[in-house]
Image 1 (cartoon, rainbow, N blue to C red):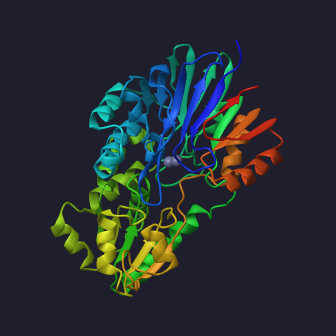
Image 2: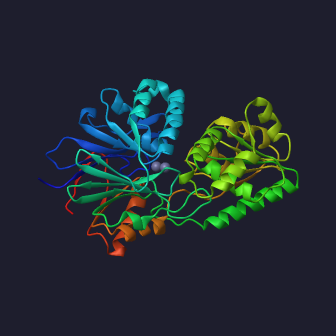
Image 3: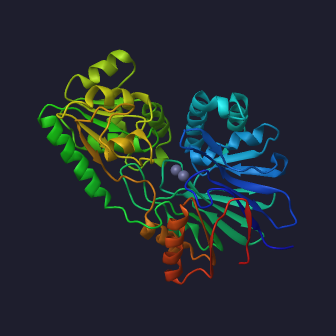
Length: 427
Ligand SMILES: [Zn+2]
Ligand SMILES: [Zn+2]
């Protein structure tokens, strides 16, 4: 009968574009897909994950709503109709993310709104702790602590348990409870992300304190603080930190952060400190149009706005208004990709698309929603896999992390996943 076979379709030796195919054995063409994401190249054009014939896909399980895990999934609905499993917030956010993706990248996309619609309609909600049967394969969902709704997936295939972290974080934040790793139990094969498999993050409280002290200093001298944030999770976390320590000036929230906050409030079981999120949503000024937007930056205030890397969206608008004045500050709290506007203001101190210097104070704080290598090792220690497959990681980072895993003495075999290659499970 043979053992299960894992094929990396995307996310091998690269961060993002995650997609994994799991088949029962090498003789079986049919399989289950774990994520199907998209990345972006230097020119910001989409780079899709490799695909597998849709007619052989029994189900797609989406670990969470970030585009690097879902952006290729609608492609399976051009000629197929697989089942889709994900948590409710994942599906609700997937709708926002995929529609926004098509708005910006429709020209490059092989799928259209119709396929996105079919995917969303096919979705069945799963909850943490729940099991579903997919033609004899038992799939179960556990929390992953990365963003609300993010899932650690376990497939039980003929007695072999294969675990997939999706993106994972092991620390508690205001927004996220840490994952319940003990609930997962022992697994045979762990397919793990290792975005930060070679680094350590500073303690979260330190980043929070730093943010609050910058806000206080800038606001005290009558300035405005711009916090460019990702729409999913980072923006809400910033709202929650500020809601707990009233900055004494108006706080404005602009961009897709608002809709995502509403989804979070509807899915309270996935939120750690719900009271704080609700307080922020009720007390802060939600920017609804140009009048609000104009008012926001003309007074001492704190502005939380998407996009997180200043690629576009309201954060870029505000930067252009406040960036020239040394009284103000721009606090970056998200990953800044090389070549992004955010990275450029940190490294070169220049305004996007010009040679004008940024005169506002610029700070970059680490609020990562990915576990560092110590956090990732906690997952290995809790699940005691016989085999570890490393994905969602740059090659040199994956190699570093493989050494850390080896040092635990837990798995017998460690594989760095490679795109378009099969991994035989010999557990
Ligand atoms: Zn990811
Ligand atoms: Zn993610």
